[in-house]
Amino acid sequence: MPAPAPAVRLSRAAAELRAGRAVVLHDGEGTALVHAAEAVSEGDLAGLRQRGQPLLVLPLRRAAVLRVLPGEGDAVAIVIEPRADAALIRGLADATTDLDQPLRGPFRRIKQRQPPRIQAALQLCKRAGLLPAAVLVDGAADDGALSVTADEVDGGAPALRQVATAKLPLAEAENTSIVAFRPDDGGPEQLALLIGEVAVSRPVLTRLHSSCLTGDVLGSLKCDCGPQLRGAVAAIAQAGGGVLLYLAQEGRGIGLVNKLRAYALQDQGFDTVEANLRLGFEADERDFAIAATMLRTLGIGQVRLMTNNPEKVAALAAEGIAVTERVPHAFPPNVHNERYLATKRRKSGHYL
Image: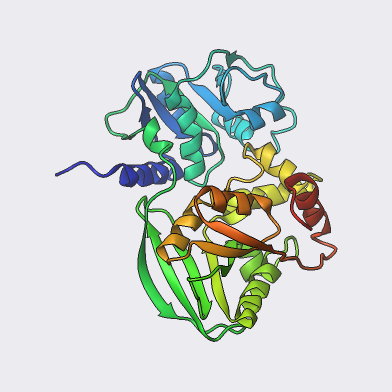
């Protein structure tokens, strides 16, 4: 039987971490046996100690919260002392735990630059929708664990294929079709709404909308996502036609559970950017290359982009999609989201 394709192995590796199991990461120089820090158990930790010196690997953002000085590169490796238990490690990884505040060191870190397999462990945790924090033993392996390479983890946007199309009359736009795209890495499907007449011979009115269960479905007042979604569909229909891409990039790309963690930090007084950084993520983890691929598949090369986010304009242009016009798309704040919108304007450069 032929070996699974890299994208399939990567999807399986992410699933293994989510299930609390170990994976092996290797590069041209060696291997590392890796667990997701947020799911590590006492048994996992004991098994790692039998293979060598366990390390807790954190991104620079999270390490800074814990007052750990950076080493070289984008990952900080902390030696897990014999006194440390699994609960302590989970607390170091997760800014929302009660353990967070008292755990400010001193921590013994590995000062030299970490090899690609170590830094890839953080990316694999992100890909699994977990906190970017890993517990590992460098130089160790396990014949029973799934193995992936650092290059596969850093492989970029997956290939997409169109898999289904159907009519989908909407309350704001009855003449709508929905198109589903499936990535080859086993990730979530991406959706496109074709509203009215979509004339690809000229710039198409387009909205890139990242999924937001709390705002789009539950009607949360903490963000402006629900009004933006429904307002975009109505505006495109009124204009005669266009496209809305519904992208599976919840919480600016950090995933639903991590977005709820960020909400918990916002309840403590941190703004939306500070909360993401405190968890170890970048302020915005989204990748709009997949949106450009969807547009090209639909035969669209020029768009009038409905957005307040300059990064979306720049991202599409970098992928070869011509943005002929930025169409403002803002809605009035409420008492629950006015700080959120102010932060987007002040820290993320949104036109609000």
